[in-house]
Amino acid sequence: MFIVLDCGHGKKTAGKRSPDGRFLEYEHNRKLGRAIGKRLTELGISWCFTYDTEREDDLSLTERAGVANRMSKMYGSKNVILISLHHNAAGNGKDFVKASGFEVYTTKGDTVSDKYADIVMEEAEKVLKPLGRKMRGHREYNFTVIYKTVCPAILIEYGFYTDKEEMEWMLTDEALNAFVELTVNSIQRFMKEG
Image (cartoon, rainbow, N blue to C red; front, side):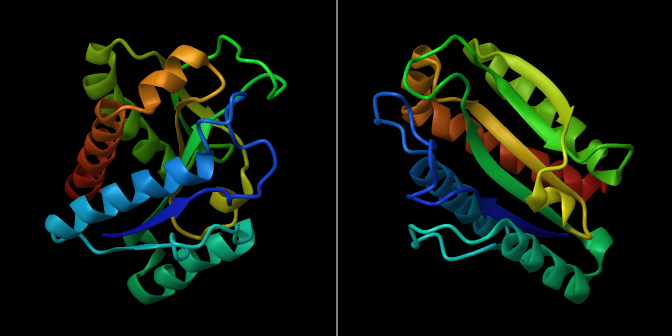
């Protein structure tokens, strides 16, 4: 199986930061993506990013899906999965709000991606619940980056940076390590249970 990691959003993407400006989503998506990629390399798992994560700008959603589609032509669409990495937001963006938890998205309807999303939720429960984190579940929405792929694709929202308590936790090494662990464990299960 070939993994395509998509670190969502660019520096100038409107609204993708905490109300106090301390949590910039694009930075954390890239930091998480690099940590996951490093671990996949150590495990000998083939993978790529949808774009150079040293860039601060945003590549279009269609272009990012296009990378997964090119990999699908090379390896076969059943042998590729796109994982889009995100941190979530709620409210007006100016004030912190109470909205927290981990969730995974697939496109609407019954798809192969649903099986992968369920695995991610199971691994998240094992890793995050003991740390007191909330689970929001598997949801469906036709986000462009997962809708336009020909291979299975999921979008993970690791937590809300507009919830002050959750944001403070997501700024810690404990959170980063937990996110890497649950994601890599999920990928290893994808490969075994494919």
